[in-house]
Image 1: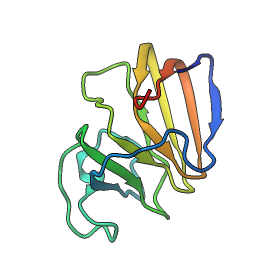
Image 2: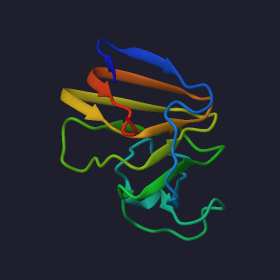
Image 3: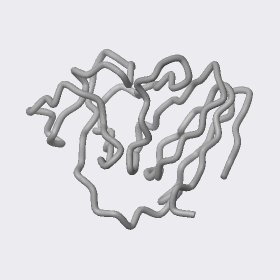
Length: 127
């Protein structure tokens, strides 16, 4: 478990938490909205041609598609956040923010930077 407070920045290098579970992929792609909770930014394919019009499920592996804007998830201010099985931030990275104390229990992958703002704990769900 790693706790972050006060605008921490975390550089993800390789596999942050190992994922040994086979999951269904879901892809984030947007060229304008950075809102993680914008359902029109989620696709069932990496070419972003088939919209799923919903948020990721706990059983899914999230992939952030190259040439997309960097998503930001304000996870403490609503009940929409679920911990996906894994998040591959690729090279674009992502932002996590929270006004409340929140635990993120997911597997991070990729080489992008994950910026953390607020009182967030990142917990390795495989332990």
